Image (cartoon, rainbow, N blue to C red):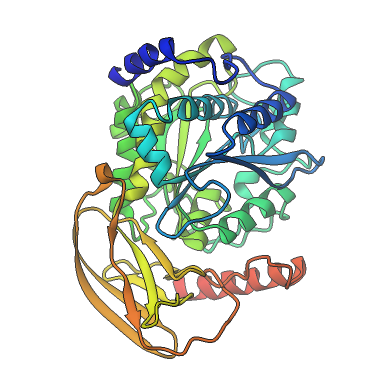
Length: 440
């Protein structure tokens, strides 16, 4: 509430630096025009790009916001917000447009947002399923269901990702492939996917490790961190924490739920982010009605504004650093393992030798391994440095003659123009089979 009042007071005295964004449903053309306009007006701290296209050829636009928006910078973590993966769940799409405007207008005028943008690279995709959105807009408004949930080929994109627990036979869609490549080529640490149809913050796993037993809690190695992330969102929200917002959904204690403990499904983006992309993603359900009248959009923004901003700060939890040779050159593909947290696929350093590991305050033993060289086992005390806008920084050093090799993030070859789509899909299938064999 205080931040909302502060925002209104500051807004009253700010020059008109961008077109005021209305609380209404914005068409695909409207979204594109808004993103291009705001990119031009805030060119020094924004970068507009697309990661691919939908089935019908609509570009999947992303606006990056940060002190160095065009490329990853060592030491600055990357966060992403995605909405509208289901085309008929429209609230998140509008909230992300308003979040973009809010962050940019407040940069230089609000200390927290200024420090946040200077210390974080924020990627915002208002719509992952623009084709589905357009279908929805041509149907009679319905709170519960629309054919626009699916993409143009009638595929549910949030059931379309590779899954290590179950064989996912859904044919890979261009929107899904684009997002997969994006996740594997960037160094995302934290993420939210915005949905509708309930009011709750959901966390991994969505897919059940004990197939056929649903619903049941499907616990991941970083369950404590995910519960903390989810509670941070729900308790920053004006009412989500109550857990009883919608008549047609269960009561959610603290306004959070383990995905599979609510209902189990395979092929979700949330699990893919965590298992394959070493990115902690929440699925946040924003509204009981998936496609509400635009008169309610302002209220949804006011309910979620604090949560959306506070969540960005949580990328600074835990530990970060580099794995380096004694001469300072980075070592890619070193594994980063935390004792007591056996990830299905170990976290690895990126091409800059960086690692980011979200952890709650406490004492942890890290085992850093450079393949063929050796390991460095170190005990570290982690504090809550979120308000300092930087995780604990700790670098590991090895004496190694590192020759150049292609970076493989969690066993999947990123697209750098060297492997065909078929080759990459084959490699991904092999990894999933191996991972599944290890689990069972």
